[in-house]
Image 1 (cartoon, rainbow over the protein chains, first blue to last red):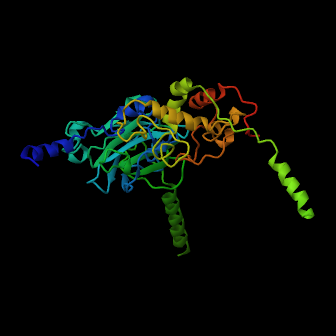
Image 2 (cartoon, chains in turn brown, blue; image 1 turned 180 degrees about the horizontal axis):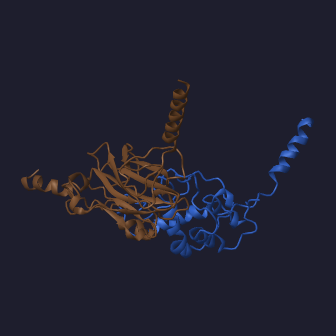
Length: 239
Length: 158
């Protein structure tokens, strides 16, 4: 290979001729005849039950840690800082996620962090310096789908403002890509959580970084306290 | 020899029975398929993990999905071969004697809406179309029912 060829090879490898399938969020809403999803966003939610696994298959499934999202005891209007982290940061990951009601309507709202607060983990890697790692897909309205580009970001952070719907669902479909530009060889994990507002579901502790507008009464400790007081009073009387 | 005579006569009689009516493939409108039904099949069925897989009988190929030509770019327009292949596979799922009973219409429909026999449920255990009122289902149905039923097509559901 000539010296010029050696110099050009890394450049050619970094910029493949073929576009990555569905690596552009606009593709999800394009008509099928143009290669688009025709309005499918593949989140596995109640409004879009098929996930990325209908196309991407054959590779190792991504292992995802979801932080900051309490399954029960959400407060309407409260803000929750959610974080998704993957165990194989060396592999590029892409995802679509949303919050919906059981009948498929958007529930609450997603807010992306201020770009000035992002650090290297949140951004695309050096091979994709001009690309944005995340995007709220406007074309998904009235749903609100958050898309993440497979550009090398190593985590996803966003804020969720809970809706007043008593029951809702968080649904995400996450692809671990093999960077082959083809859907085979990729692995998919689908995350779904049934969520409920405080007072509509028992059990499940509070987790995460919720900002609570109301304090919640704790009936069990109060009852124990009353029982102890009554026992002490009776013991004193007997003495 | 005498004891075999009735058997031989019976076999001869069977072999002379008229052939059953040959199976006829449905002949739905090609242009309507390309403009209306094909985009729906691409959108809802033709994923590489579903009916874009080469090992499936019912296959739909096209842009953004599995390509019939290995050299096609994902975003290239659908080729004439891809449309024809998808059309042939789709019409083979149509019951020409009773089009409304076609597999193409029953398979993707929820069982409580009259569908049957599809394994491709979504993550929540639902079929592709929850009801016959789904606009995409209605597009498929309109294409299938646009052709008149063939009375002697040789097949037919209940």
